[in-house]
Image 1: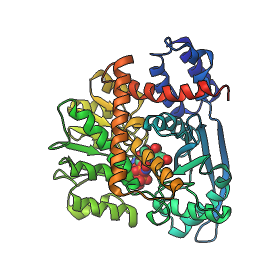
Image 2 (image 1 turned 60 degrees about the vertical axis):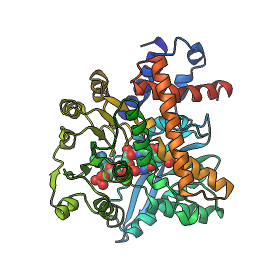
Image 3 (image 1 turned 90 degrees about the vertical axis):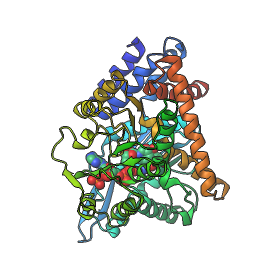
Image 4 (image 1 turned 180 degrees about the horizontal axis):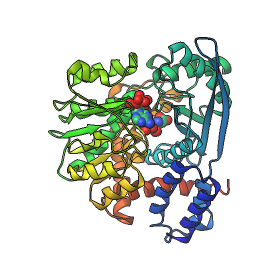
Length: 451
Ligand code: NDP
Ligand code: 2IT
């Protein structure tokens, strides 16, 4: 490593020795910047990397709410405002019991480069809480969301910070949070994205992450004489990103044969057809059930998740793999299984789903990998378009938003592959995405002085 990247990494390790996910995300970017740092002495001289790895602001707050039995519950809320160099902080809110400062900071850090890659003027942030929405009633979720927003409102704003959904936060939660913000501030502005269509949401925002992932994938494959059409894919997760990834794979004539949740996975060798996917959407988004019910209904194999060891989903033979659940869901053993079974491409729908070891295995084995900060950027890109529509007090057609999304994903592919070719290897999209995302943020920071 270059002395400056090494210095900054050591500093991160020393400052936050327990923040493993944050360290992993930082190291991934630093390893790529290592390849350009000699050419751009300003990065070192103006301590760009040291500044980028320290959040501009991080707030942690108490979230008290009462459950349906009238008992007081206390959760911890977060908002990490990592960088406003190129625009207002932008990034989702995650509600999951595993949420902690390390996970918030890794996600906010990734978001900075991802948002830069979209080409839209958005800085990076992330927030959420260790609240577990599983098994909670609608009223409990509402009371939690109202309490969460009762603190969060003072830190956000349409020109300051615009949150959105992530794990555990979809249309229901965004609606409750938006309602509470409006009530406190007495103003109707686009302070959240992913809103319902009746009050400022954008068409295609629910679909955008999964669709964008498949658009980018198709562009990468096309250049290598491959295609989704006629192929088989394995997809993990069964939430927002997984659902619309499968939908677009189906539309392009491919077949997706798996879905999962934290309890287990289903394997449907005939493919998750349009009709079966409609069942999944109702099961997951309305009934809030478990993916096991799919196996019961369609009489297919269900494999429960038994340990933190290799996940059986990554041992199913397929052309392409789309991890769409959570960070580090592909560990070394999973990568070995995927490679053994001849997988040709990994499209990261989730944020940082491949461990550092598995990423290295894919690179060494020449398995193409589209990293999350490029591959799942379609979601935040359409969030950016939702902000534009809100500011203009207009709504665009489905066709227009979809077209803009396609163009943004095309632009990401172009910038990422050009940077890969220029500074690394033409198929090293990890370096390509990191370097292309980094350059714009670094230039903005250099122009704005020491802030
Ligand atoms: P959802 O809450 O809609 O779905 C999450 C899915 O992942 C569920 O099936 C869930 O299973 C599973 N999952 C979550 N945590 C774990 C875990 N620790 N172990 C195993 N399975 C888990 O979330 P999204 O689909 O929105 O998000 C999925 C991923 O995509 C995340 O990494 C997110 O950061 C990323 N992403 C999301 C975007 C968006 O617009 N929503 C945009 C870009 C990236 P279970 O129900 O059992 O918890
Ligand atoms: O990780 C992500 O990019 C998201 N959860 C979406 C963020 C957003 O602001 O739409």
